[in-house]
Amino acid sequence: MTVHVIADNPSKASALSAIVEQRHVVTSEMLAGASIKRSGIEAAVVAVDVADVDNISALKAVSGKLARIPKRIFLIDGKGRLAIVQAYALGATDVMTSPVDPAQLLAKLAPVEAPLIAPDQIPPGSLEAASAGAASIASMFAAVMNGTAVDVADVRNAGSRIADSVAENGLSDWLTTVRRHHEGTYQHCLLVTGVAVDFGISLGFGRVDLERLYSAAMFHDIGKARIPLAVLDKPGKLDDAERALIQMHPVVGFDVLQGNAAISPEILDAVRHHHEYLDGSGYPDALCAESIADIVRVLTISDIFAALIEHRTYKPTMPREKAYEILQGMHGKLEMPLVEAFRDVALNR
Ligand SMILES: [Fe+2]
Ligand SMILES: [Fe+2]
Image 1 (cartoon, rainbow, N blue to C red):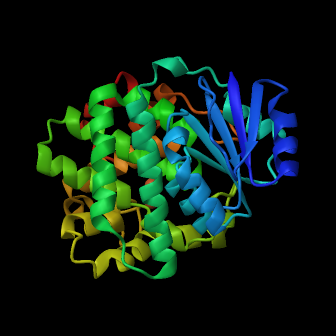
Image 2: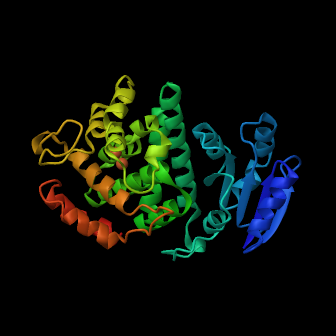
Image 3: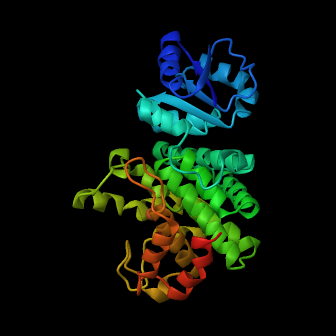
C-alpha cells in the first residue's frame, strides 16, 4: 500500500521513510507547506510535535485532506496523555510514542493478525466512530487529570455514534476496527461500549435505556485516569500493591463524577459497581445480588467479555468462544440467564 509520511523535520522524515519502505510504497513531505496532493494514500504517518502552535495550524490547514486517508498514525514524543489527546483532536486514528519500534510501526500499518474482514470492507463509519470515541475518552481522561469538569454531552454524543455504528455495521465489525486501531484503556472502553450496546439491542432495550447503557459504558473506567500508566498498561502479573491501586478506580470514578449535575444516579451507580459480583465477592462495596441493578449486571458481563478479547501487543488475542466459556464458568458471580442471553452477542453478532 502507499504510505505518506509527514514530519516536522527532514531527519524524522527520512528515518521513518526508511522503516516504512521495507514493506510499502512511501511518499513524504514536510509539514510546513504540506499539501497531501497524491491520491490513493492508504495510511499516513504523522511525526510532528503536536504541542507546537505552528504545527497545529499547519495540520489544521490540511485536516480535510488528511481525513480522507483511512489510517492516520501520529507519533508523539514521550507518554504524555495530553499529547495523545491533542493527536486525536488533530485527526489521528492511532497514536504511538517516539522513538518508535520499527516492527510495531509496520505491524500497526498492516497487522499480521488475520483480519476478520478485509480492510476494504470496513465501512468508514466505524473507523470514524472509533476515532471520535477515542478522542472523547482521551478528553474525559484529560479533564480528570486537570481537575476540570468532564464534558458529559460530548461523551454521550460519542457513545451515540458508537451505538449507530454497531447497529448499522454489526458488533464483529466494531471489534475488528477498534482492536486494529486503538490500544490500552481507550481500546478497552471502546470495546466495552460496543459490546454493551449490542447486548442492549439484543435484549430489546428502548432508546432511553440504551442511551443510559452506552453512557455508563463510556464512563465506567473513568477512575483509571488517576492511575499511573505504568501500572495500568503493565504487561503480565500485577503485585498486591498494584492490584490494590487499580481496584480503587470505581470509587475514584464515582468521586470524580458525583458532583456533575449531568450524570444520572444510574450511571454513577454503574461506575462505582461494575466490579461487584452477585455472591458478594466483588469490589468496592461487596454488594450482593439484590443490590446490583440490572444495567450494572449487563455492563459487568460486557466489561469482562471485552477485557478478555482485548488485543495486546504482548499476547495473542483470545477467541470470542473461549471468552464466552469463561463467562459461563462464573457461576454465582454473574446472572446465568443473562449470560445465556449474551451467547448470541458473544459468538455470532
Ligand atoms: Fe473497571
Ligand atoms: Fe472496564
